Image 1 (tube, rainbow, N blue to C red):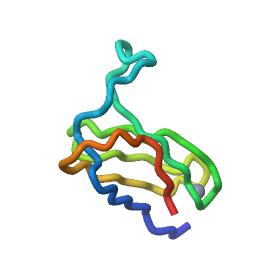
Image 2 (cartoon, helix red, strand yellow):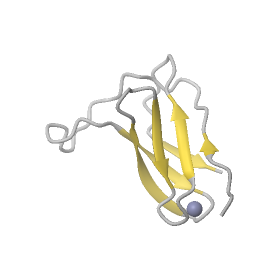
Image 3 (cartoon, rainbow, N blue to C red):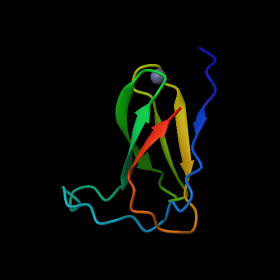
Image 4 (spheres, rainbow, N blue to C red):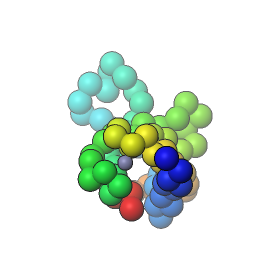
Length: 82
Ligand SMILES: [Zn+2]
């Protein structure tokens, strides 16, 4: 159980998330969709409280993942961790 943590550096990942049309009034935490190659499973990864990165874990093996948020503004919300 010593898998290294995923760290995705996504060029243009913006701090300004696109409006979430589904239930944004209830929970304001933006998320991105990640496909975890390790277990071939898809999961949502939520932004941290500070808004500096997206953090999550593989739902099966608990391998951690972080995605730093930098300047830019991609509207892509689905990525692959490999
Ligand atoms: Zn996994």
